[in-house]
Length: 232
Image (cartoon, rainbow, N blue to C red; front, side, top):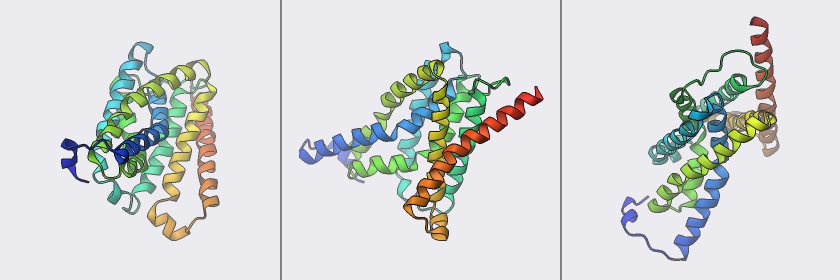
């Protein structure tokens, strides 16, 4: 990537094509991050949710900008995606338990900074593939890369606000959000270089793992909720 290209942008057909690709990829790949933010801030007072969403989205994107320069090598690091996937599955279950309507226990994310901690940890582990997608769409153009990462902020803010409001009105979306995060975690686990070398999974098997993790997160969360209710 040539950082000097930031000051020498040529608005030709290739640039415009890359710009469109970056925007499309960004919209598609920002969805799972918006789910994390929406679930993390849902346990905040309504007056603090907007602040939590904005700070969370900005913090996540700043983290992406720093990590993007190392993402190609990071994705090939053994056990990194495996550990990240397990972390995402754990966070998915924990967020589901913290905000599920049946849970009578105290919710964890009581402050903006506690919610931000959850958002940053989740984004740091689940954004490797996202950053690689934006990096590929930018075709090595540093301007397009930075543009794509920074425009993630308004996309995630809009999507997180929408999801947060929908979760209040339709609690079933909590289950969908937890399942989405479970799927992301399962995909990271099964595509880790060590796992693929050991199992050489087929595409069908990868889909089965993703689906199993999506369902497993909800089952684990429901069992945890029942255990908590028995202890209170």
